[in-house]
Length: 473
Ligand code: SF4
Image (cartoon, rainbow, N blue to C red; front, side, top):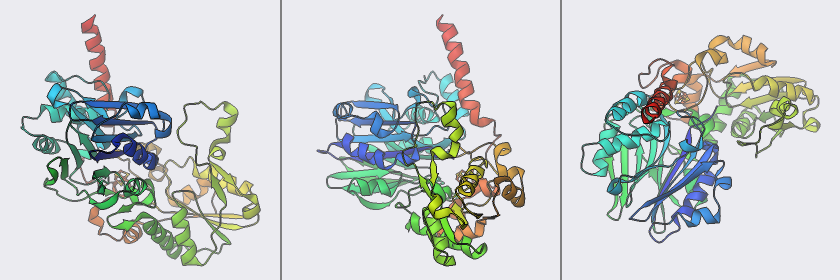
């Protein structure tokens, strides 16, 4: 399961804003590993550099030196809408003379196809196949006079999830959708302000965390200072998977350190599903904290039974068949010296399709584990996500097709315990109606249409591309 993106923005006169943005993207790499990009503005123009690859692969001293100015935004991408291609890398800059604007987007716009068709009919042209370019063109099409009003106009028309950093030639904006599906926070540095998907990015660049940007809020930062504007919100719907898996354990969301929330999940699993065992393992890295929580609550020692190859991120080198056959071994190395003859409790974040967990169980048994008891922080995932998480179709979700005992048998575990929704909510210590829980409950905070719509934007854009090519001939 992949998250859609990490976004960042900085407004800091007299600072090397591109370098600050690079290090923030470095800290947000876990949110997207397909492409990385930075756009910078110096009051007169916007420059952009974005390519496929990790931030450390994309940028060099040379490329950063061309990104000059007082303001910058940055983006790490994992594609949801729009394929994984260079032309879809962000930030996207649309330059209409005085109206130049750049966007970095985390989320997924449900009504993008409808809005795209409307803009296309008005003569707007598109150079990517992302819903993010729809947002930026919609802003430019707004009849309002100033940028904040243009953005607020667009917020009333967009349906779906969006945490944005936007930049004009002389101002930075942070925007969070009225449901607050994706996180976004505000920080300060010596001579300016920063906006980031997660607070861990602020820590790495020496910024101070000020506060989270609220659902439905637009924060505007310019030479006039920081201003805030609020759109009406019906309810909050932060994606609960930020707590389970996406965000880094050292980030703080809603005032709660993610590591603490994950330890509480592990402790809850230990209370609900006790078992006689010798060792607890948290599948690294996302379930490490939950493993600690299970161990503390149960009194069963925790150990390192699986070592993760941390540099397995996205690679553009195709593995040959022999390497491909290694499957999960490429990612995890079991430690037979520790696992031999042990009854294990293995805590993991989630089971989506059920393609990885059987391999992990097999790997542990082959390394000598006598029993493997799986404990899962997320409740069974029975419904797909429409808000920017590349999960699976309903048909592919194992919990939509099989009962828990059937899944246990399928993955080859001795026992399987899933967290329930109540336990999850107690672990994050906030009221239930703050969260989107739709992939467990099917109760979507925003009305969604048919699953087919996920592909609809790219399909209609491809058709238009063919038509305009034919017209040019
Ligand atoms: S459906 Fe699931 S993954 Fe998608 S936003 Fe809601 S909680 Fe997150």
